[in-house]
Length: 108
Image (cartoon, rainbow, N blue to C red; front, side, top):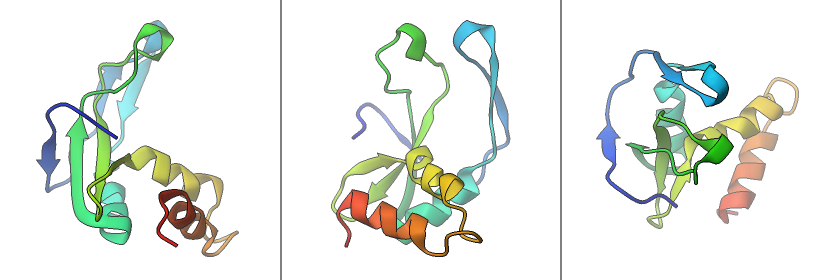
């Protein structure tokens, strides 16, 4: 779940460099197209960019997160859902990522 102000995005955004832990640079890739696809598939088609929800320490970041609004009003981090596809590529495991996501979200 997310809290705080959120800007609902409608168009892809360009890559942005952000400062990460230990001075490493994190590239916020132009993943909004994937977020919108996931938002349409599992939610109501809305993607919100929200401030990082970590508690600080080694998990501090100045990069925002993309959250998808589900039909029941819950917000879920789009990166968590995208990770299912990354770990279970459709060309190797057809339908597995979607099945796992639906199960995790209680959409079965």
